[in-house]
Length: 335
Image 1 (cartoon, helix red, strand yellow):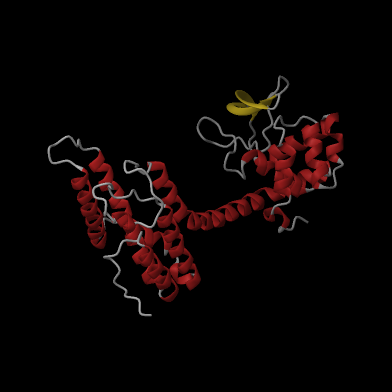
Image 2: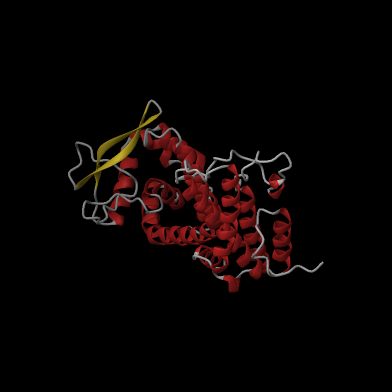
């Protein structure tokens, strides 16, 4: 069967057109990606026109079900016509989905095209106005599920569809960025963790995991008002006996298992070396952390910190164990 590459005049909600697009995605993924993005833009324009029509008063002497029917048909064709030239949405989608296209496999383009088709199928087109004539067959134009003729797709639905299209690519980029950031975090702090490990006996990766949990891998590190670092990666608070610098920050504390916001005072250091040294001193000088110092496995270390009251988060140990068992730390050499 020969599939024409010119399907710009067909509506994507037509089942035959969707099948043609799926087949084109297998034969020529790059071309299909452009066509499918164009169809998505047409549907977007159709929803835009529909919203504009519904915002217009319909109390004129020429307003009736018949005029609504033909107006909707006209808007659908107008949206399709506009999309052939485009307003930029299709081009942006293709550019986003084709990012780094030279380094990806053809199967990836097929998957991206099918992603858009799935999004198109998830959009429930409002039916044309019915009830004009006993033999009216206009309902057969639409094979998707019917909705109320006055139904309008919420803005959130449109956003979720677009997010769904870009999510796979964003996830890949974010994964690469997160991996790089966590790697830099470990490389920067490993020397300090090793020194603290010599005095506490706690494995360096255990301390790095806790620092990652407390600071979000360095992204949420406690900072001064001028945005300069406090080098406090362990969330150590400044009690009455603390004589060094402090910084006040809003934090989340759990009271009877319920999270509450509170302003607390935290210790500030002049370097990461000082921060790790104070962390080691805190654990060694406080008897309640004695079992933590003798920890040889992740579960004992994490649960020991929680039982000793290091944090009020009831899920603290579970979160810490998850980081300790993550690939970011499991694939690193700490000796």
